[in-house]
Amino acid sequence: QVQLVESGGGLVQAGGSLRLSCAASGSIFSINHMGWYRQAPGKQRELVADISSGGSTNYVDSVKGRFTISRDNAKNMVYLQMNSLKPEDTGVYYCNAVTGNGWNYWGQGTQVTVSS
Image (cartoon, one colour):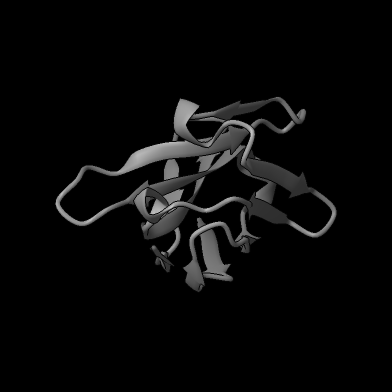
């Protein structure tokens, strides 16, 4: 089992920045990929960014150049630095961990609201 706890969401004006954090605990040795997903009202959950255990990253096109995902394996943390935020970035952001055998784990989510 892996437990994930997100923090760092909030309300910010367009153009502002937020940093999301996700703390992993439990069977952390089994984690391979970690990532951030978001779900806007009335929309499906979508991948925002993910990072492999080796540090390879992947971003959805809409956040490239604005968001940065990073991972601190020693602290069992993953971060999402979000700059130049836009109203369309609004949603609930979820931390995700995928183990080597393909199990998916999710955090409880943190709300990000970007006002215009």
